[in-house]
Image 1 (tube, rainbow, N blue to C red):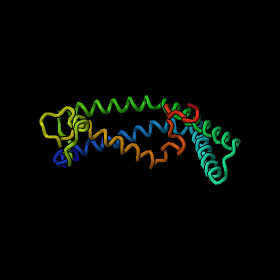
Image 2 (image 1 turned 60 degrees about the vertical axis):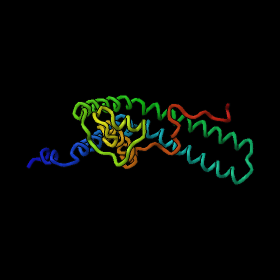
Image 3 (image 1 turned 45 degrees about the vertical axis):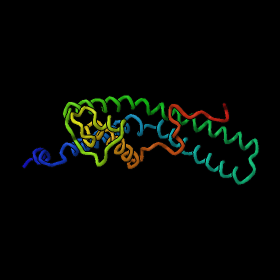
Image 4 (image 1 turned 90 degrees about the vertical axis):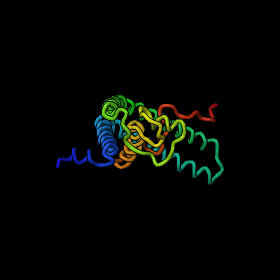
Length: 191
């Protein structure tokens, strides 16, 4: 018996297909990111500078907490924080380049899945979702059963969780100090 016909006879075949395609998409997206970002020397140098600045800032803050904070120490901390923010911003801009390619891949896969599973219930939720979540989970489905789950919602949940965990497993997660992104929170000291 062939694998596709055996998979079609399973009770959860549509759900498993969506999860499998989500896993494959995450692997392809991370491979693209590796080709365009993670293997380059400029990424490696940016990442090491962020790691060094984050460690230096952490040690400076623990030392200043032990002793009375002097004005010169505060200026040094501010300088390191500024350097860390600039490096984080540069890293985000560097990653933005491959983001367009990854987004294109995700749009193509989502369009393909949408045409394959249009109007089909791919899973049953173990709970009755509230308003906004129900609109997302029931998108494009006929009927009034709130526990029905569309492909879009299952793919969205799988993509978020699988890609994040795959990045952590492969060691591609952002450095500790690089959480600011393109639009960092404003600094309360300067305002």
